[in-house]
Each structure stands twice: as C-alpha cells, then as structure tokens.
Amino acid sequence: VRFRPPKPSVDADADSSSFSGGGAVGNREWRIDDSGISLLHRAVPVPGTSFVFDHVFNESVTNARIYGLLVRSLIRAAVDGFNGTAFAYGQTSSGKTFTMNGSGADPGIIPLAVRDIFDTAAEAADRVFLIRVSYMEIYNEEINDLLTLGSEKLPIHESLERGVYVSGLREEIVNNAEQVLQLLELGEANRHFGETNMNVRSSRSHTIFRMVIESSAKHQTNSGDAIRVSILNLVDLAGSERIPKTGADGVRLKEGKHINKSLMILGNVINKLSENGKQRGHIPYRDSKLTRILQSALGGNAKTSIICTAAPEEIHIEETRGTLQFASRAKCVSNCAQVNEILTDAALLKRQKLEIEELRKKLQGSHSEDLEQLILKQRNDMHKSELERDRLAMELEEERRLRETLEHRLAKQKMSQNHNNTDISVEQFADSSQLDVLKTPDSKRTPDGFVASRSHYLKDAEFCPIPENLGSVADEDLWMQLNKGCITDLDMLEMTSDFKCPPSPEDTTAVVVPLEEPIDVRCLRLETACSSDRQQLEDSKARCTTLEKELELLKEENSSLRQELSKSKHDTDHEKEGLLKELETEKYKMEELKQDIRLFRQAFSQRQGHLTSLYTKSKAIVENCKASRVALP
Image (cartoon, rainbow, N blue to C red; front, side, top):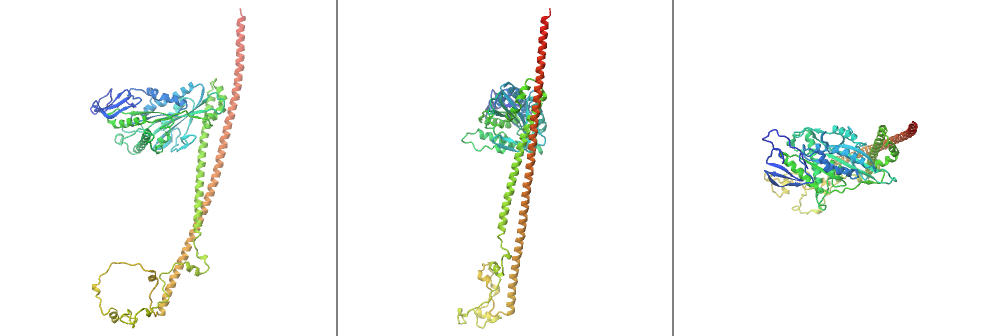
C-alpha cells in the first residue's frame, strides 16, 4: 500500500488532509506503524480499521524503492520462465499512473522493468532470448490497440496453445530497451485521458503493457529441447470515481460508469478467490474484459504484485478504507506459479533459430548494425505473417459457419415445401361428388319436408295442443282456445336476462315448414340453398387459388435461397483461391528473404576471407618489421 503526498488545501481552516507525520491534523487520520496501518479518530483507534500488509509506504518513498522491493524479483522470475503481473489499484487521483509510468526524475515501474529485463537477459550468457511487446487499453469495455491507429474493438479468444489472447493485437519484436520505450511513448499518445474535478489528466481506460519472453539454451543438442515462454503484464488501472467529487457528466460520466463496473467485477473476483476452496463458488472472470485477460494472473499460473495507492486526506477516508479492504482480501489469494516450458514448434524463437543461428554467431564479433536491423525486420515480417495466417483461418471458419447456416435454412425450406404440397386442391377430384364429401356441411340448408304424425297426439281436442281446424291465419278465437280463455297482460310481464341456450344440431339444421308449402316458396328456398352452395364453392376455389399462389412464392423463395447458396459457395471458393494465392505470395517473399540471407552470408564469408588475408599480411609485415629492427645495429 502506498500513500501519496497530501494535496495543499485552498483554505487552511477547511483543510481536511491528515496524515501521521506531517500536515494539518483533522478529526480523523491514518497512522502507519511499520507494515501496519490504522485509522485514528482524535488520536483514538477506530475499531475494525486496522490492517497489516507486506509493505506500507508513505509519501517520501520513491518509485525505485517500490520497484526494488516488489517488482524486481518478479522480473527476474519472468526471465526465468514464470508468468508475472504487476498492477496498481486505487481511487482516481491517488497516484496509480505515477507509480506505473513515473516521471523523468523518478521513473515508474514500467520503464524500470523494461530496462531490468534486458539487463537480466544479457547476464544469462547460456540462453538466447526473443522478446516481443504489445500495448492495449480497455476503454468503455472495448479493447483498442495503442500501437496501431484504427485498431479498435478487438475480440478475445482462447485456445489450448495460447490460452486467453486478444485477436488482431499488434506485437513488435524488440532487441533493446530504447525500442520498447519508443513504443510506450507511441501508446501513451493514443491513450484516452480526460480532465475531472479531482485530476487534470485522469486515466479514462485500463492499459495493459504485455511482454512475451521466449528463451532457449544457446547450445542445443537437438531440436527437442524445451523453450521457456513467459508473459509479463504491467497494468495501469483507471481509478474508481464518485460522481459528486469528480463532477463528471456526458462522456466523462459514461466513462466513469464503465470504469466503476470493471473495478467492481475485479473486486468480486478477488472476493471469490479469497474464500475457502470448499465455499468458493463460480468466479466471474467473463463478466469483464479486464478480468478475462488477466485470468491467469488472478488465482492462476503467475507471480502477481499489487500496489494499492491511497489518498491521505480526511475527505477521502471512505475510498481509502475500501482500497485497504480490497488489499486485505487480495492478500488471501494464493497463486500456483510454475515455469512455462514447451517442446513443440509453437514458439516463434524455435522456428527462427535454425535459420539465423550461423549469421548471429558471425555478427557477435562485428558491429554491423544494418544487418542486425535486417534480421529484426525479418523476424517482425515473419511474425506478422503468422498473425495474418491466424486471421485468415478465423475468417475461413466464419465462412464455414455461414455456409452451414444457409444449408440449415434450405433444409427447413424443403420441409416446409413438402408440408404445403399435402394441401388438397380442387383439380385433384374428378367430379363434384367427391368435393361434396369434403365440403363443410351447410347449417342453413332446409330439409326436403316436414311430416307431423297425428298418431303421437291424443284424439281428444281438449288435450290436443293443436286444434283440428288449424288454419293458415291465427285470429283472437284461436289464441283464446290455445290459452284456455286466459288473457295475458303484456304490461305485467317481466323481462328475464338475456340468456342464450346453445342450439342443438337438430335445431340448427331442421326448419319447420308448413305441411303444404307453396311451390313458389319452395322454389325460392331451393334457389337460396343453391346460391349458398355456389358461394361456398367459389370460396373454396378462392382458397385453393390463394394456396397455389403461396406455393409459387415458396418455390420462388426456395429458388432464391438456392441461388444465394450457390453464390455463397462460389464467393467462398473464389476467396479461398485468393487466400491461397496470398499465402503463396507470402511464402515466395519468405524464400526471397532466405535467399537474401544466403547472399549476406556469402558476402560475410568473402569479407571474413579478406579480413583474414589482410590480418595475415599485416602480421607478416609486423614480423618483418620486428626482424628488421632486430637486425639494425
């Protein structure tokens, strides 16, 4: 844990900054006692606010001392083949970027680590190193390449060979610290910064500076010797923010929300990792791109150092307490780091060593910078061709998935077409009698006749509901006879609720007609029934026509899908041919580079021969001179 110096207050009376050992003292202050820290309220310890860490630094400690105590051993381990990660965590304006990047007078952890890596590699005389670097930022939960303009929203992938990696990220092969520092300056120029009420130049994104260190024994006996491949992550996190303090709005408010969300997920991951193994549940690495990229560094195969920066002012006590609680939980996390050795040809160093080993041996005794730069350029070109090949393989995989999707859609279309072909059309029936069998029954059609049998009724007129002299016209005498002389007062009737009883099939199909139906009425009824049947036939024909049109549309869509699939196959084949041609071109360029190396090798051989002959002649002349001096009196 590192405390930055307190900022000067505008009003001395309202100065809320407090820190043991200097400055004005308020009601609450943080006190450092060796490796422990506690919160005091009017010189009385506050319960539950005492913490113990590996190291606690006050404002007088320099970046070089922090690097020597926390990161130097991690750098040495990375050169020996261990994965390593170092990052700064804390609220905004607490000194994270200064700790990681530093200044001209006080370099930070990243520049010190870069120089230390090359110095340590130079001390290992029995190993050959190949170092490549990349620089990325996570801005609003999108990954951007800081070394390449326009390379934004890069995806994250995972493989058994490379683990979790960012696809399309530029990697540069370097051979000295100055090249790395130039790349760092380029990345810092492309990084997102902004001004808030708490910081003039506030980091608005998380940055990850990654170095991949490959090494092998200088004198390998065979091609099956192991190669060490380690990954070093130097991370500068953006600080957590409180909107009332920063005064962020608009774009700054959106950036602050994404920053707080990713830091919250980082805290959740640390909480899960700090729990006991039996009680530990799912670890949400995939909830944030930051934790996904640093998955191996958080509870995995890596040596990790965390520097928690804090502000000593009393106004920031709650944020500082949260930072210290995060650091306390992080101390409970255990990693299992081991040396990363591979025996396959996946390492870039192993693929290139056999081709340039002899040339490097000859260059060890000379000072030809041009040829050294040529070798570095060749390595970068070969590495870029490898990345391009991976990108082309990913594009081919996407094309294959698209082709499978189209084939699946075509199969579903065929099944739908077969289902529609089972519909019944009018032309499939030879006569109208077969169509009448499948036709919906007409509920309005009247029966041919109605016969009332008198045998079901009593002969006595008193008990017969229908009088014998029932005529075609009802008069008052008839109603009097049917109602036994009772007269109904219509004004006294009460209307019941509108309750409709569902009609029975007999009631809907049977229509009571008079026994002696007039011919005109019957003809009219039959004509109405024929019109209804004719209308239903027309409706059936219209429905069949609609189904036929739908079938034609489905056939046209099926044809268009076939054409689209054929076009997609043709485009895929054409693009595949283009990719193969590009691969052949790259292969041809590689052969040309090999030929250039052979030519340079011959030139060096000739030059070495000339130097040898010149050295022999010079030596002979020196010997002659010495002999002549001896002969003189």
